[in-house]
Image 1 (cartoon, one colour):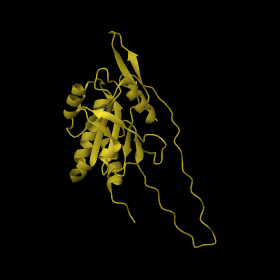
Image 2 (cartoon, helix red, strand yellow):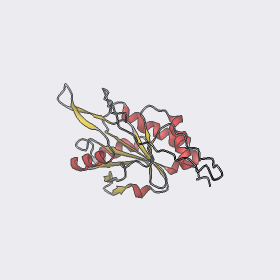
Image 3 (cartoon, one colour):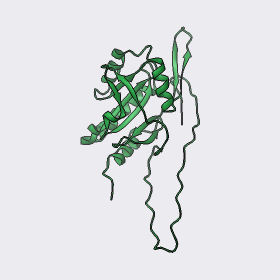
Image 4 (cartoon, one colour):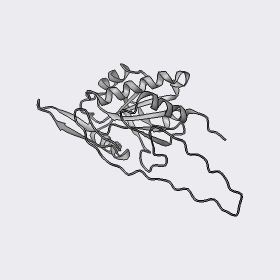
Length: 209
């Protein structure tokens, strides 16, 4: 998992489980195994993390992943004072939504703040509605934020600045869930609008029988 923050870079490595295929029975008629879908993002289907999300949105409503069933959900951890990674990610997601056309309403952006001390509900709401009013912003207490980040295996930490304040280092990638609410992809920061749009379209496409 690639992690870096606003102002400096930190790289973390996280192991991704791989799935093996068993050989076909040679006595029976050979069957052509299904071809695995190819994504531009990292396919983390079946991951044993990123299953639970339960925080208040900027209007004070408790939100969880089940609320968005039927949509592809893009979950990103960040903070509103981030100068580059966070606004770029949110802006690109808004572009993806537009490129999807009529399917744009089936893409849900969810922004989880890792800086609830500064990101009040009002600040979070103004930040996201300035980019796309449909995006949901979530925040929790410090303990809830830590627990949620741990559930998603997201790294973040305060970094003091020279003026006596602080910025945040954090995981820059995002997590994508399919319309059934299953974790499917980890999106690397900087992948690009076209590549992400292609992945979202694949997840929105009807299953082939």
